Image (cartoon, rainbow, N blue to C red; front, side, top):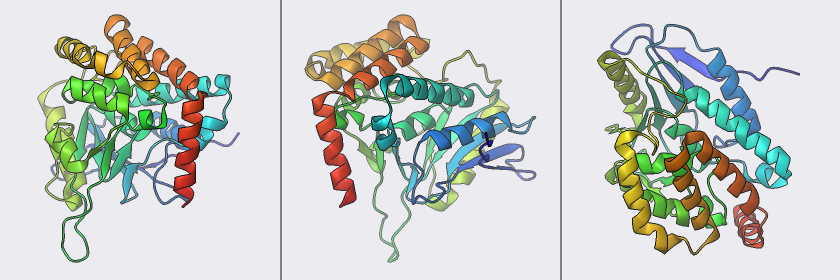
Length: 306
């Protein structure tokens, strides 16, 4: 079996961000980066081969339109239940490698980041956003989408999104949007506090992300415990998330995706990170086979072809 080629990793060797590495996801022959099995395999190889002695890591994208446009829905629908369970669990383990690196990490968000792409990014310690590039005439760029749209297709997140997003923004807003599939535009995400820092321009994104990593590395030692640094089980998050969950429970429990999200959040608060992931896997596998999901996803594919 051929070992997948790693993604490009560049380490700053001089200047104010020396010692900070940038891992750049590329799209291959696709126009945007899509989260599929080959990408996850390449990410695993890359993370296993990172240089020693780094001060921190920035995860970036080589495509201007999107950081990661989302998961490969076609592949997810083609797998049988056992295959999908194995794939979801494997991807969670690889994302977990990112969240357990012994130094600060940041995702440099340059464009659309949806579904599994946002889940990948939220396994980093920080999300650093950038405004969309200006148009050719100097007019403001078109805002890009950010969020977890799975419920709009009558399914649910599968890599921790239910437990990650409420730890980064107002919990009731996060849970409601995850349960309905409503995404943000860039300005809305920034106003909601999703980004730990926002670059002044699209062109200065990597500089801003590397500077954040370098500052954070200089302030304190990173401690890892098997779960991402920002998720609802952290002591400072649990009480607000529980209150937010109670505030929206009656509003969203009437739909299948809503109940799946509620179940995953409940399980995370009560039993921990790995238990929440297990609920997401179970619910995604179940929901993608329901008539409502099959219809919604078929309509999505038909729209995409147009």
